[in-house]
Image (cartoon, rainbow, N blue to C red; front, side):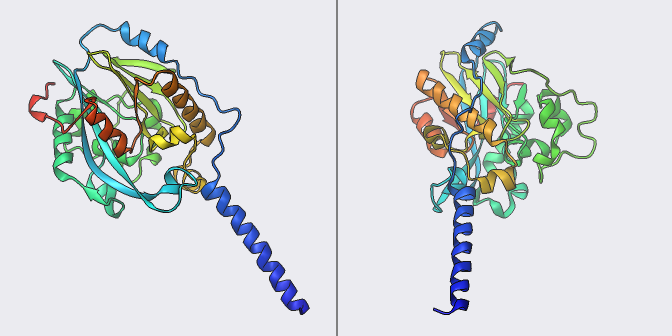
Length: 311
């Protein structure tokens, strides 16, 4: 073997080793850190909710506004390159005398070519429901959760009912391409709280920064006593919780700019909660299978019944 060939083969070997290590690190590796921790005191949340009088929500409706499609490994690192659907949802809590919206999805202009499906009728129902809601809560400031709010045709009318957090207001760069119109938030007083806050009878928010600075979970206790925890995009799918694996670093580091250690702590806390209290329905941000299972179980109802919307 000539010296030139040996050098070429050696260089190729080094390149393959580096490329392989990079692929593993950015696409496959997702080990739960030994020190991962996040405090999720569900009993404290329950006590806070119990201290607020008033009728609790009677049912939870949802609209499936659209869907993205990502490689599985982008969702759960190491899961391969097959396409996995990422539905976009909005939820509505229905009370005897009011309604609450959790997340406002996005329109087809914001989603653009990234959307593989879009239901214009579902989005229109959600827009009408926003106008009648007494409270609008956003799990975090990414476009597929806050976008419907930013493009609402009568934003001044719905903003008074909207409880954006200080962190969500302070990080408009995380919402791009969704943007509030110039001056829309002038004089707006955002929600400021430490870890837990009750916003309405049966509804509390739980601060969970990591996926974004303004990420929060929404705890809901229905009138019949059943409990639901909307976790936003702490996990895109329930599988993230089951296998305790984050999204691929390629996604979290270069696109989402996540605090991975914070998200790992939240995944660990959610798994502990699911094992200790399996009766709590945990709903990740984009898990169509979980939503379908909860429809079958009678926990969720598909479609906003905007005819019964009460301000």
